[in-house]
Length: 592
Image (cartoon, rainbow, N blue to C red; front, top):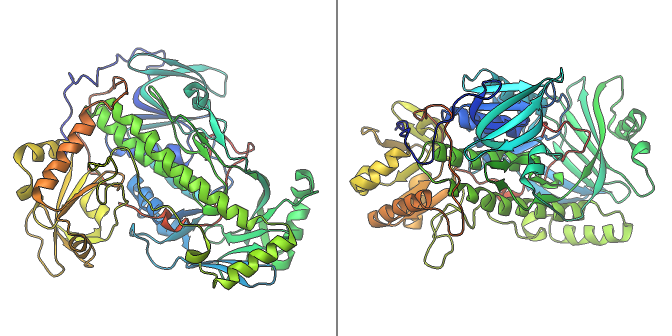
């Protein structure tokens, strides 16, 4: 279902004359053209909004930082339009092992097969290739303007817009006006300075030498991803994407960064793996300082933070870039509903509420994993090894309980206790459906936006008023049919692999209402409960949250009808401990 343009008289969408100095006005301005900024722009543009992206550096950063993403983030990257390209950009990983200095296994993670989001559990990639794919998509999208070599230097807030002043490479200043501004501009964020956010710092600092290598000959690496917990020098060996490898070496007491960060030392460290200048290309060596920090404020009026501008975490859970992509997915659909006039701007306060809790879990897990890995005392390491080996190298028995991939507050259905009701806040799964002669994952077959998936036709479960409200949101209605059935009606979709129907029936649910970022808004046991869910969603979208102040939205161009779009997740449940890298100050601010 498509969404009609909202009324130009919507109280949350006054029009702005295009009278700024450069004549460049857009619905949303994104500062930073790294993967998070580009993903955010693509989500918004694919839903019909105009986006300007400012990047201070004239060309994309050519060196890798992150190397991993999980199945949820693969799904979110597919939402951004990269689904067909991901297999060629990634190397999947079945096993990730931690071993001690003697080569005994301390932990073994099974990453085989597909995760709950319908994509490989763990994918390794070369970040410059991923960014190139995102940049190509953004630069060819008619609703996105990417301006590289434009550094944001000033920002002026207005009642219904924000003006950002940027300086180009010729030192000429340009003005850009937008309804909303998203700072995806890295650890040294310009936008964060204007938000006024303070950073909570857990005081977890370690320097590691990152070495990226491209072997000239094919080699089999078993396991593909390996963590060596050697107190003499903790070391990480992982895929750096197709045809590439990454090593990470911890700086030891008494060593200076200068001593560590040389090409000669890099080759010295690689020698035990028979990697030499003759058989390999050393693409990069750089010392990174792993940190654990997050912003206490994610929104200030019309300004938002996302990615490294809002949080930094050690790489041990592989969730740095992943968390930033989740930020973009969460914020973009909410901005879209406000711009369209379907929601009060007060819902934007739930962005920080939801993402801060999620990120703090990921950072906490990263720190706990780092405390296990970064042991340099031989006696403490021996005690650690004995404990982990004694528990059979089983992550479920050794590691602290992992937080479930769910939201505990925010824009989800709540029960009488005030806590999430039933499955509300959980990440929905994704499996294959057949609909209209096409078989594919739910997102490919159904499209972007809200989804009501039910064991019978949702049109028969919903009263006319609530059905009309959902249609106004662009909601996709799905009647799940058993394998072997024929999809006849408009809403019919065959549960090809018999995944959805057993799951719903096992929980006693007849329907689930799923948000555009794939989190479950709520589930229903009866038709009345489904109607009540829709009522609650409408109330939350349309009513200012207690204690919040609604800030008027601005659609700078006529609000578009919603184009065909995408729609569930669960990945961090296994806290993917692999080698995603945090960034240091040597990395361009728009890069992460």
